[in-house]
Length: 491
Image 1 (tube, rainbow, N blue to C red):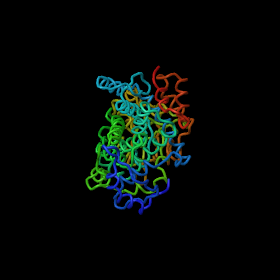
Image 2 (cartoon, rainbow, N blue to C red):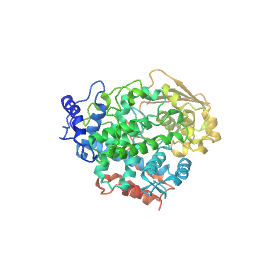
Image 3 (cartoon, helix red, strand yellow):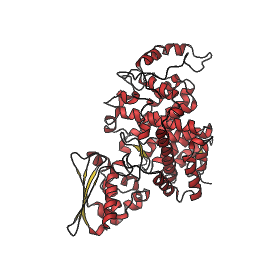
Image 4 (tube, rainbow, N blue to C red):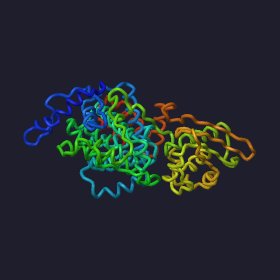
């Protein structure tokens, strides 16, 4: 889509009262008297941000998406379905299903990897929880947002109730990811630094715009939807290491769906809920860079920058796990040979993953000590390496006491400098500039399929997992995307 120009924005803004005035008789939805040109300028000083974003989302078409962006959208979907199936029988999901079953509405949508069906609001929440519980989902590295959880959970639930074609679905998925990541860029890192879990707080904008796109909201209705989403920020970093962390993308999914449904009936909101003095951005962050939201819409895509985790834990630990596995395999070292493991790391590593004595698998996902120790003992960093059993393994517990991370100037969050000192006096060194799974060293399609298969193993048969993967890869050709959700349930 063409970039936005200022003149058209001012014309569109001036016509806003007229749009409301010509709403259909009997309280019907407000519709613009004339189409707004696709070419509108980015607003200055935050004015018109919500409307600009709403206009872009409502006008953007599948055919506007570059091939690279479409491909990354498909990979995003593939990875998300795999992690949703993989996490479906974690204790967290069992508890949530048990708690919500008495209150669920009609059986409208599936839960990946399970037999239960829920109303779309609760299904979106539960699939969002399932997809995030292993901390194995996708990551927009610029903001540490996990984009697919809020978006895919919401629109797949919606697509089971209202059949959606593959191209329409993929367009909505990409637009949702684009929206949440751009909004995240506008407030990161300040918003994140004070304690907000940005996947939840920005993720709700992804889910609401994606669902709103599938519902065919008008521009004004999309403005309302974004405003209602802005009123529902969810997620605090204090929750990390507990079941509560996965609650956040799940709730962002259901909150966005809720907001879009209300807006479709013209439930109103302020037209400036992102940018107003007491709106979302100014309330939850000391940084507001509105150009990150509106500049280059339709020209460059944050959705093309999505990455996929090879390790089931906090992203800042991935360089250290990568280094540890490489040193282990290259030198065939065993735990009893190791005197200590010295790490030079960015401050964010200890801030986010400084738990020295994790007692549960979920806590281990935020322990650099456990992550390095388990990687050296088992040569892997998948979901099994962050189980309760692994965290309590005596060999791993003993080795993590020998992990010594040091905050070091000039080391970036995506880097690590590791030295393993052996009992015989030898030192083994590995510097990681970019870990596997980064934009520079991306996971291949084959690697994503192996990850999917490993996650689905023991939950659904291998042949069924293969069929679901094929549906995801071929999503653009589907007449009914609900086939993906229905294909991923227990028979």
